[in-house]
Length: 139
Image (cartoon, rainbow, N blue to C red; front, side, top):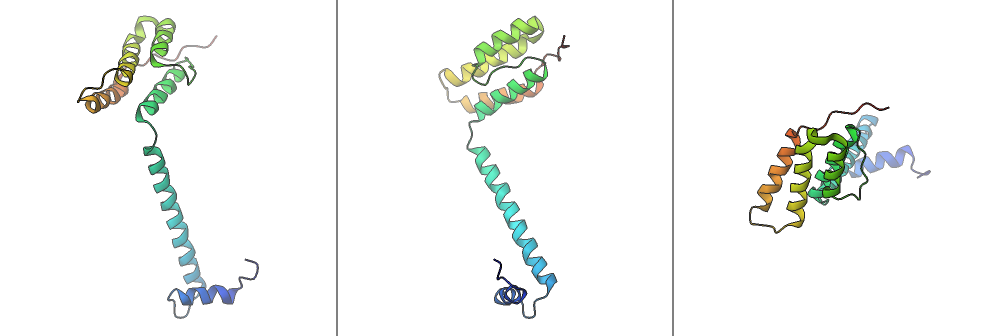
């Protein structure tokens, strides 16, 4: 790399098809390489994200929502135990969230009917409209 002089850089541009390369041409090539690297990174991120279990992602989002409300739960806690803690901390005001967590667990561990994908989609949509408990005041 230390011996990659200006003349070698210009020779590289000539081999790429530039007849009389200039610094603007070099900047264009470097910009294109950076753009390709960014697109490759974005594509890799999207592919990697698609490899993760959507059920686990939805459960993690529920944990985050509950943490914003003042209930921090360990990542290893199953939905049934989460529902119990939600009811213990927020009472009847969070019954909808507790019921949703139980349905989420039922979807994962219960018998999977032919409409399982549709049911999971409904659980995802319901997540957005759930009446999440309001943040509790810290004492």
